[in-house]
Length: 380
Length: 173
Image (cartoon, rainbow over all chains, first blue to last red; front, side):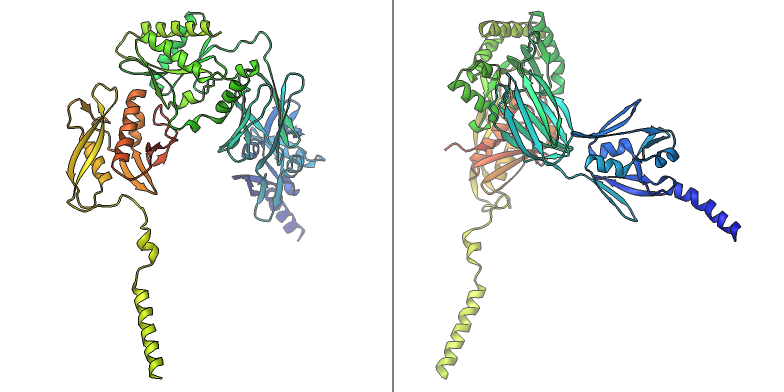
């Protein structure tokens, strides 16, 4: 009898050590395990972090998982046996994968943990944008964006952030600070994109706070000089031409850069393409309401009050016409108007330059560069 | 008693006739779905907008055609547009070999659906403007619609290549 019990025990211990259950983390199905049958569920840390939008940092002193202002540090022990016996339970590494105690992580980060006989579930509700508050202490804009729960954010570009698991109605909220003039929200497959309108080209500090994110926006140090010309393109085939134009602009002493995204604070934005014969266009929408709201409002504000801080952000439509006229003269053509979408998002002087593929590109590029330089000298 | 029986019979007849009549809203408000066919064999005068051969604008061509069975003025116009211009100094809106646009209408809007191949054409702003305005002007000139929306591959897109497709092309009043 005793022998039979020992045999059964010998069979049961490895079975308990291997115990596994499906773990639904957010919308991702992972596998949870129960080392040594001690009733402590463990899951793979990196996969869990990816599924729930958690911050993940592995250092010599341990593994850090974060969610907004919340965080947990776990020791990574060499064996599961030591990890489950620790009080509180710690993480362990096996075959290059770090496993973390799920209940402890869920409690520390405010994640909902539901267990049943069949499966485990860890979920986070969507981080709903609740409010945004702007204040302007000491020459800076300080923006506090409150969500319905703690959330992580990833910077996507100048003044643009992706809030993982975030949600809000897409739109634009005007904010009247020294530099900021609006907060744009857009849906994203992984959450919510926040765009701080006016932050591009400025110094920007940011971080998580309880249930939200803070942003401090102010002028760059005196050594910072925004680029003068941004050059973009619509068709991938036109990228080499755009690069060649950047080089031609730099040869005239201008600070120019290629951009696939918005032009930011560059004083001039040129969109390059091919036209036969050469052509120059400036933006004109079919519907006047099609101007992006933040640019339209900033231009209206500038017309009422020519504030130097506002002039850093936006130029009147006449600036694009003046630039386009110089470019057209250089290429021996006239100025057309069209609803070119990328030009709509350029807050300062912007024009489309279509270069003739049958003409000598070097000559045309040098003429364009000289026209831009002349425009900038006339409009410092 | 006889009068009551007569009244009952007359009211039954009225009820029967009323149920046979089509509902009023079907008569007064025909639903606007797809392109409505016009009288077969009817001769119509179409206004077709082609590109000018020098690429500097659009050129309107008037063309008289007999409507085919199931065709409407709008469908006939796009069928003729696909055949290319007959007047001198005009050029087709899209290059040969590109699938012709699909067109349909509803609720005061004409939808022109372009094959995704159009987004890969080597179009500059000038050629793209001619294509989009040529299509939109032809649609507005040959329908009662107030606006034209252009789709690519059956879905709304922000741009074709350079130009915005977000705002509709509206009839000028």
